[in-house]
Image (tube, rainbow over all chains, first blue to last red; front, side, top):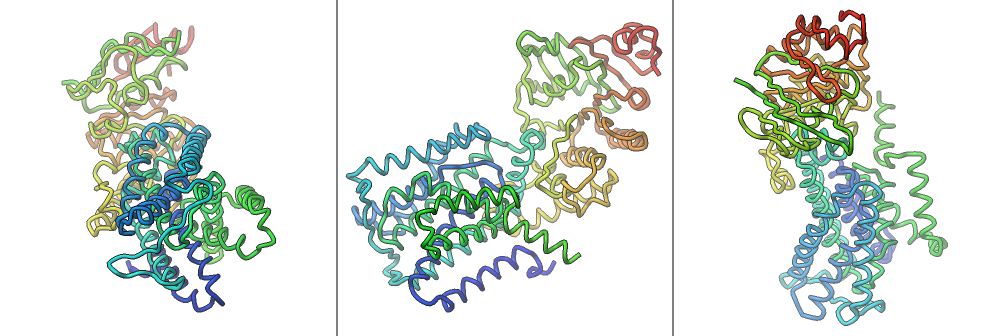
Amino acid sequence: MNALAKPETGGILALAIIIAILPFLLPNSYYLDVANRVGINAIVCVGLNLLIGYAGQISLGHAGFFALGAYFSGILVSNHGWPPLVAMLTGALFVGLLSYVIARPIMKLRGHYLAMGTLGMGIVISIVLNQEGELTGGPDGMSVDGFSAFGWEPGNEQVWYWMIGGLLLVAVWLALNLINSPVGRALRSVHGSEVAASVAGVDVAHYKVLIFVVSAVFASIAGSLFAHSSGFLTPSEGDFFHSIELVTMVVLGGMASVFGAVVGAALLTTLPQLLTVFHDYEMLVFGAALIITLIFMRRGLVPTLLSAFKRRKK
Amino acid sequence: MTLLRVENLSKEFGAICAVEDLNFTINPGAIHSIIGPNGAGKTTLFNLITGVDSPSAGKIIFNDLDITGIPTFKLAGYGISRTFQNLQIFFNMSAVENVMVGNHLRNDSRFLPALFGFRSIKKGERVCRERAERIMCDVGLEEYIGSDADSMPYGALKWLEIARALASEPSMLLLDEPAAGLNPSETQEINELIKRIADMGITVVLVEHDMKLVMGVSDHIIVLDSGRKLAEGNADEIRRNPDVVKAYLGHRQKVC
């Protein structure tokens, strides 16, 4: 098969082109900042979509992992002088271990119970970030030093943009690889029917834990990027509302669609920034977006549009 | 030689004994049927053999290995597969991918090579897909190779479940009411498919209500009633057994 004809390769290429031309269309660095925030959210959503869209497991606490990654970078770099790259990887490792320990019991829950379990987990993380003032600066937040690796540092939004854009492409590539492999198929079979999956030899519990950890690590790394690129952290990065925002992005963009997660992140990150009139009603807009999606296009934007497009072609 | 031996098997749900002190053996090859009125414990028995439920007492020996209480996902590796009375299709996948899941244990499912898209994984995927397509052709599903599972008719989904089960190359295949909901001509087709599966050397164990189908294909029939074994034998013996006629079909009725 021609490699370019494959939808995945075409999708990555299209995304790369969009990332490449976007900065030349943006009028000033404020928009670049928004674009960076889009990229960071998109990385979280690509990971979260593996859990929600493909494996069919909900998490209402992923902002917690995002914030943990961010604070690991913030605390280790700014308070202890660690190299940022090492701090980022240490944070990811810690979040990986923590999410493993949490996932073992919590992924035995299903449906609403799993939603409640992950919700509680996110809230606990959020409380810790608020209360451990000596470490995290508490509700006032903390400032974070800039990123640097091997003597190089991204000086302005422009450089950050290329770095985040590159990492988003890597995240999309990794997610697509995973989905188009026996591991990805096993994950989707867990979503389809747990009992049929286990009859086929799929260790359902193992795969649920695995993908929970993977999505947590995606969130943690995105959190570290956020900490350095924004330079300032507050515990609200890890609160319940941020978790809901992330889930809404995945559902709106399209569950079980890697590019859908990116589109969802782009829409729901930019809209509140551009339509500042809505600022006070942000959660209302998110809620409405979620409800409208679930009523009128349950599969989300990208899958719905893709299948409509395919039908017209026929 | 026996393939499956069930010893003093019991399963209680609260005060109800779904399966009670059951003993039987299944020899390799041939087609075996388990019949009985509703609530006789047939599906519970399947769930016990496939590890979906764990027994309250007793033992299940498969190929001289004690498989009692072994989790379901490990049993595919022992050569046991099954279909379901109420379909368990992966509706979020294409038809071929459904069958490919059946091949799970033969695929390289290591995480890191999958994540980084190793060439060997992609090659394995191609082989796996070709194999799944071949199995779909074998069972007569060639027209659905390009379909999504959620766009297939009910009858075809029954075949798809069998194709998925065959993809795991089982030595014993448990079919839970394969003819339920099928029309007479489809039932005839499934009849032939079951015989072909047996000819491949796979031991078929059938739970079925369609007596014509059961009597036509089975080499060996076990009759359950209220969780106990009522009778055992070939089709002729079962037909003539007065206990079976009484319990299963009511008084004065003849078995077809």
